[in-house]
Image 1 (cartoon, rainbow, N blue to C red):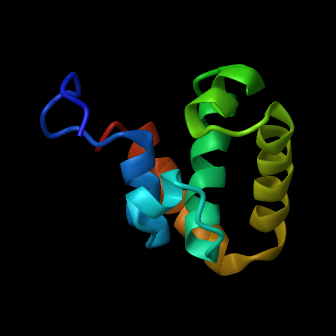
Image 2 (tube, one colour):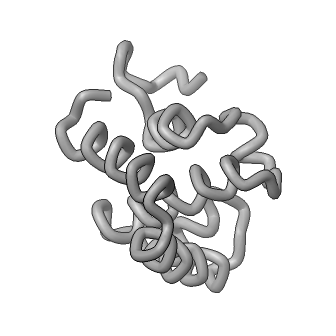
Amino acid sequence: MNPYAIPGRMTIEEVACEAFGANLCEMLNGSRERQCVEARYFSMWWRRKQKKQTTFEVGRIYRRDHSTVTNAEKTIEGWIEVDKVFRAKFETAFNKLANGKQ
């Protein structure tokens, strides 16, 4: 838990884990389970596209290389096009973050 977090407000990672059914610790520690990867990639995508952070900044947050962040962006966009179940989870997380209902 972040001591500087606003009470009652979820982080990007918490929203992603809730939407994709992942465990926060496993997602941050690099689990390769599908739901953890989806949540981690969504979090990376959100930070790049909505918060305008660089690939280096995002990679540092998740202890990954900048190329992993670039791969996450491409993978997310591919999953949105072909996977209806993923798209529904994506939209849930996106709307929750976009509307500030964290």
